[in-house]
Image 1 (cartoon, helix red, strand yellow):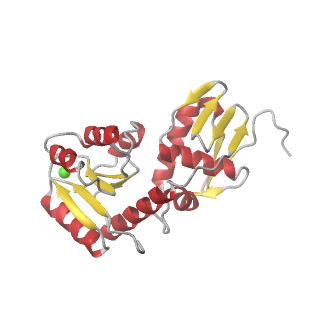
Image 2: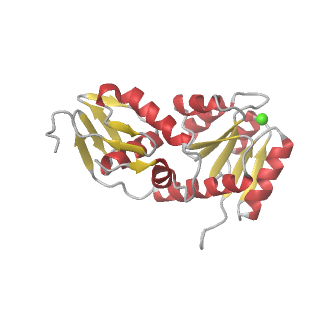
Length: 235
Ligand code: CA
């Protein structure tokens, strides 16, 4: 945050012990912290001033965190880090494309939470650069980085932001195997070995959405790569 003004993180969590310990770690990392103990309070606090990032618990007393996430998305594209108590909720968070940027499963290491907040904020700042005007055609699949558009033949496919970034990263390294850690670092910005299941869940979503046109190949025990386009002559 060199030279920049202090960034504010809004922590939405009704469990006071968790909210306060997350707040302490974020404050120690140099962030200003606001807390909200319910979805209603969170939405009220979004107005002024807009936080730089929202840490949002899935289980809230008055509303489902997913619904809160959706409502936040209707009014802003502030980065959202979801907290969930159960592993099964992860597919729900990512699968429903509610627009969360990342998630963590409880119990979590507060230092890791701070690291993720930092990386999300670093990326969301970097993402505001003018987009590259690059396009990749791969078989029936067409990806336009500038417009962030994906098409299979004539059909436009709606991808969540991280799904798009992951697909682009793989296509941009066609033929090269990328490990889950490499993908985490390049797409999510983690600089340490994180929860690599995030990668698997996003690959699963991409395959579901792209169907037959998905070029992603699992390299067992290593990671993922993009297969040669159908109809291309294999070397
Ligand atoms: Ca809760």
